[in-house]
Length: 134
Image (cartoon, helix red, strand yellow):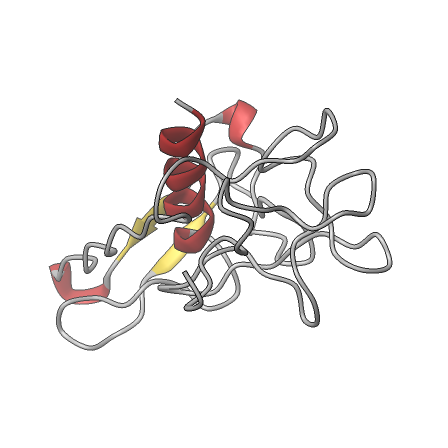
């Protein structure tokens, strides 16, 4: 369940941030949060999901390209050794929120995603989520 939630939130967040999702005609989609406000890319997620899903549309009636599903871990789910709520409770070095880029996972400008206790979010095998070292 957590993996599905994490993947779903990744897709939602990636669809409503500073760099909006690509359209199948090569243009870029425009996104608006469910409450009508613009996405705030300085926080994660950039829209208040309690108010509903963000809406993204492409110009000229083209379609948004479907994002590729990416598993964060080879096996199992990313986890914290403390009670951090994954992914909403994650932070970056210095306490800031992670950012999301199109086609990529939540990430920090430098270093791994951190749990509340300061330890890195990790896969059950000890690797970092979304890392190529898996």
